[in-house]
Amino acid sequence: MAKTAALGRRVELVPMDPHCQDITIALYRQEAADGPRYQVHSFSGRPGVVARLDFVAGATAVLGGMAAVGPGQVRFACGGAHELAARRAFLEACKLDPAQPLAARPLQFFDKKTGHQIHVAPLGGGVYQVALEGGDAGRAAAVAGGLVKLGQMQNPAPDQAAFPCGQAHDALIGLLVVRAVNVRATLREQEMQAARGQLAAPSAQQQ
Amino acid sequence: MTAQPMNSRQRVLAALRRQPVDRTPVCNPTSVATVELMDLVDAYFPHANREPELMARLAATGYTELGFDSIMPVFSIIQESSALGCKIQWEQKDNWPTVKMREPIWEKPEDIVIPPDFLTHPDTRCVIEAIRLLRREFGDEVAIVGKTMGPWSLGYHGFGVEPFLLLSLDDPGKTMQCLDRLKEATVAFGLAQIEAGADALTLPDHATGDLVSGEYYARYLRDLHIEFSQRLPAPIILHICGRTVDRMEYIAQTGMAAFHFDSKNAPAESMEIVKKRISLVGNLNNPETLFSKGPEEVRAEVYRNLEAGVELVGPECAIPLQTAIENLVEIPKAVRDWHREQATRN
Image (cartoon, rainbow over all chains, first blue to last red; front, top):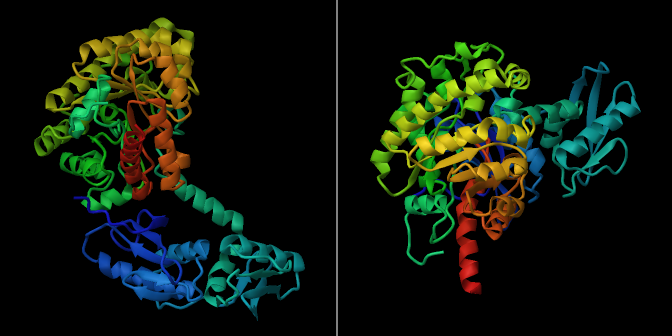
């Protein structure tokens, strides 16, 4: 009898969890009447895994501004999927040091490239405006563009990003703005992670 | 097709002989291990490449969890190269062990010596013991497929890819000497696995479409592959990656049981070339479909192969270690559904 449960569609994977014996943790998307739910799951039966999954699900909820709806299960209160953003919340949750306190990230972020503080202000209806202390409109637009890409958002104005659900998601914005300043690096990191574990023929190997 | 129900082993062996089957078997001539399956049975890379119990336990999930008709315990392509003395990068759970080909161990044919402990070296013995364990556990219910690397691949590992290819251009005589020496490792390891209980052997010989032409295959490898099919008393599944339609005619002449073919070759086009002289297996795309897409796309590729008459369905090569289980279990599901639909139509 197969032990693999029907968990839904796997949307993200951390192949080796540095905080729990190198277990693999994945995020599965399940469809429900009140909107998609995300299940944090591992097939490992090693000691400590249940507690680790509880932590990751809890941290995903905090970082993503999501609600816990069952053991290891979270969803957005708006009922939307926001899948890319949920994946990012999960990935960041897996990286967190479990000994540190959990908190949603603020809507301000220091931009090393310009040396200025970035502020993201909620305008209502799920719309957020990006501004830099130095008033660099081009950089603000680039960061808003990064949010659009990473959060599957809309772009009502060059310096704005809007969630299609029309609801506020401050925690998600705080999470994503840190990555939005360098989307290319984020995507490159994702590609490199995905390329691991693909077997190449000897003729195609680099070493 | 036959109406007689078959078990997995009977189904695979019949398809390898191009005999009637109750349904198309789902066969993995190369690895279907994933990081999630490693967790499920607590058998992680790299240890599952080096300890027989872990190797057998992880391999068995292909049958017990995914529903394939075969079990293939030789996940990597480096076991015998390690026993031959190559330096190995063993990596960790989420990556494949590889031969450090930038640190070659041979420069000329005379350097090739098969060590006396070749079959008792821990990394070859691991495979042999794992096959023995699997045979003991599963008896005759599922096909157990071993793997022995061909001399061309071993040449890459021992000399390095570039030096070996240059040698093949500059000195065909010496290249043949290399292949003649290396083929004995292929045969010895293959025979040991058959004796341990392997029903069939995958024989990867990486004369891949990107680096080696069809003419090269005919010149250097066809006769050797004919020799393997005569010396190894079990069905052999030849594996070559890449676009290989330019050598399928030669491959079909070798007497091997099956050719494990890449998704770069269309199933119908490949079937047309081999003309039932050799079974075809594989073809499901790894990076773009099994790894990156969902069950629907997997199903479409399975159907494409079944409609072309491909004898055994499976992934084109060792699947990426992060492949989702839902995509893998879709393969046997799709095969069963396709046969059900065919039966209803008729």
